Image (cartoon, rainbow, N blue to C red; front, side, top):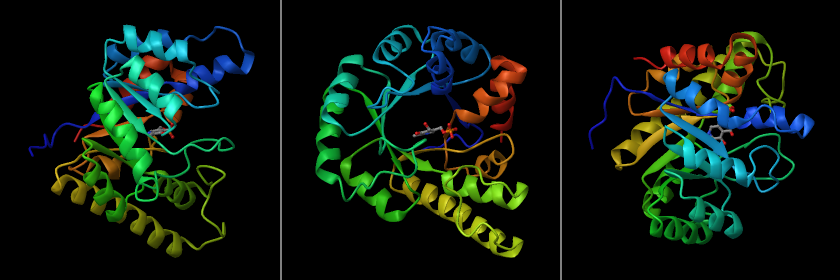
Length: 267
Ligand code: PXP
């Protein structure tokens, strides 16, 4: 399968605009307003997550975004039959199946594909019938890739959360999230080695997935500082980035935040 080595596409996850709205439970800011700005600023895709608890994006947001986005919409969702039914009705360009826990602050790890094989298989068949492209959000392991390949999906998205946490611990002495790697007082040398392993796992997983004919995306915890090494991995075609872009947009405006990130995606 041919990979365009110069091209790294950017999916902008706009959930955090809805997070801000939900802080007041009003209708401002409206995530729909982000669509044209993202498109004009170089984004290639809009990503949203319809969580079971509807803590940010609601069904009506998803419906309006899919109906009016000038860019393809990648809808993240759990392997929960009632959610899959909604996704089949909404018919986004792509569905990314993610693990979901009610109490989590964000998606903490990849799907256990082998452990949930039958329910994922069922969801995949249902989505395929509706001609929705499918991606599985997985940890960067060969086992998860092989199970994904057996399911016949087009894409895998590699979870970059461990890499992002370690990068933050190594470069700023601050964990990226509250799920920092313990213990927190690791030496620089130890962090270098953990970071190298986490990065190596992403490189290996991306190359392996590509060799099996899968398209490869990556995301979670990526930001303006830690993105550079990821962009050099030629077998990764797409990044999905949310929190860091929306956080920066508070200060720079969304257009600049998106176009700055897109510039960093160039290789
Ligand atoms: N990709 C997937 C599958 C996700 O679940 C998320 C988080 O919602 C992201 C990418 C974006 O992560 P972040 O907001 O940390 O950039």
